[in-house]
Image (tube, rainbow, N blue to C red; front, top):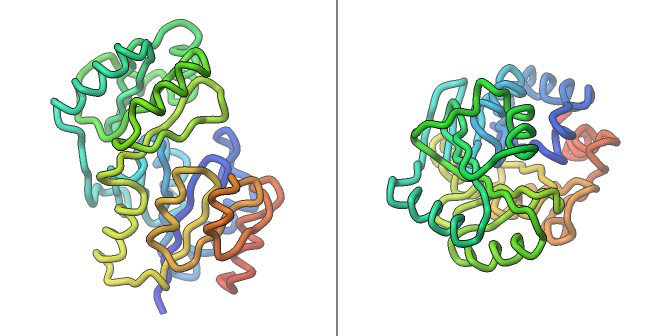
Length: 252
């Protein structure tokens, strides 16, 4: 029976952009067995493609709003120009910054100094451009925890804000189309069922993945609310959690 597996990046497949060797080998082994594998991340399409393009079948990026298969765009849900302007107005009112993400570059909004330097280092300076584009998601940036909490409240009912551990940035999942909606799109596209699907995650935004799959694997380093929804809790990302879960489900 055909299986499809969905993997978050940060805290699941990678640690600060570094992919443990056991995870690389696991993805290569799944590919050899003929399983379809997808990255499912809040990261930009170009970031995920650069790290995992040769290791997986496809990529769900921008927390669901951009989907590619075999390096070709399969589906996208871009922000409208009106939605972009509304986001900018809210960020203005909150005194926060943003990083608007397209398929090939990201555009900073009210980012400067050390924050902008860090963004350029993380994503590659060639991918950070001060120009207009078709955007699929927006990362938010704050300089105090009070602003972060006010921001979360201000966007309640519109999106889920996935804070990056109090480090000053968050990625966002829109309620109209999130990781779960993207997984459902793929399952429908390939005529698969929930029982054919496995999702691996560690963060709050990965709850959307768990909504649409039968096999829900939470990392040992994952948040408690995700573990409560898991069908299996594996070891941490640093301790071969992916490989151990694949062995548990007899996929390897």
